[in-house]
Amino acid sequence: MQHKLVIENFINKGTEGSGTYIKADKGMLISKIPTLYSPSGWRRREGRETPLAARLDDDSLLVNGARLNWPDASHQRDVLATLRDSLRFGVIPFHSIAAAWTNGEVRDWDQAPIPARKLQKEVGIVVPSTGERWREVPVKDKQGRVQKRSVHTLGDSVVRVRDRYYLSAVDETGTGSGMYFLAELHTDRAPTSLNDALNFLKPKVVREAEARGSNVRRQGEWFAIPTKFLTSELMRDVERGVAQYRERHVLGTNGHHELEEAIIYRAGPRKGEVYARGVLSHTRHEHVDLDLGTIRWHLVVHNIQGASYTLSGGGTAAQFD
Image 1 (cartoon, rainbow, N blue to C red):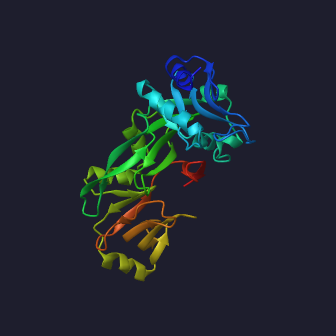
Image 2 (tube, rainbow, N blue to C red):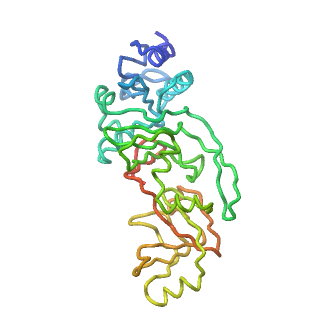
C-alpha cells in the first residue's frame, strides 16, 4: 500500500495498513526503517521504528512534532499535511511526552517508549492544535509600542498526561523562529482555551498589572512589571542594608536569565522582590534580549508553572528550562 494511503486511512478512518516503510495499527502509526535501508545503495545501517502519531481513547490524534531524520521526516510531513482535514489533534514532540510521563527522569522517547495502550488511556488532547504553521505575534517594546514577529509553531495546544495538564506552545521570546516548550499547569481544572491556559501561568501580580493597563513584558518564564519607584527610593533601601544592588544578576538558582542592573530585597516587607532596569538577556542566547530601558525600574517575577520541558539539539531531546 502507498505510504500516503496508509497515513490517510489511519488519520481519517482509524484503519490499519502497511507500506514498505510505514505501518499502522489501531493505536499507532509508525515509520519503520529496516536495518539495511540506504537511499544510495544497500549497506548495513541500524534499523529503527519511529512513532508518527497515536490515536487516543477519545479518538483524538497525538502527533509527534519532534524533528525527525530522513526518511522519517518525509513521512512526518505527509502526516502534517493530512491533518488539515482533521478536527481534533495535538502536534507535540514525543520526547516531551516522555519527559512529562517520567517527571523528567527520561527525556528521550527512544530510551523509554510508552506502550500504545498506556498512551491511549493516559494521554488526552484538551485544547486541540491548529497544525504546524507560521503566525504573527505581537511584541511590545519599552514604550509599549506593538510590533509583529513571525514565529513557527507546531500548533499551540493543551494536553493531559495522566492527571496533569500541560501547555504545548512556542515561546515567541525565543531566538530565531521561537522556542518550543511544554509547561505543566498548576490546576486540577481542564483549561477551556489557550488563553485560559496562558492565564494559569501568570502570577496574580501580573494579572492585576495587566488589568490596570500596565505594559507587562516577558522573557521566557520571567515577567517584568513597570513600577513608579524612583532610583533614590530603591538606593535608600540599599544604603539601609535591606536590599542589595547588583550588576549582571542571574535570576533563580542555576538560572540563565541575566539582569543588567538589579536591586534584590533581602529583608523587610519586600523580602524576595527583585527590581531591574536595562537589558534582560539570556546567558545561552536562547531568548531575544528584552530592553527594559534605563529610567523605569521593573518588578521581575517568575511564572507559576510546574515542570517545563524545552527542546535542545535540534529538537531531538527534552530538557528542563
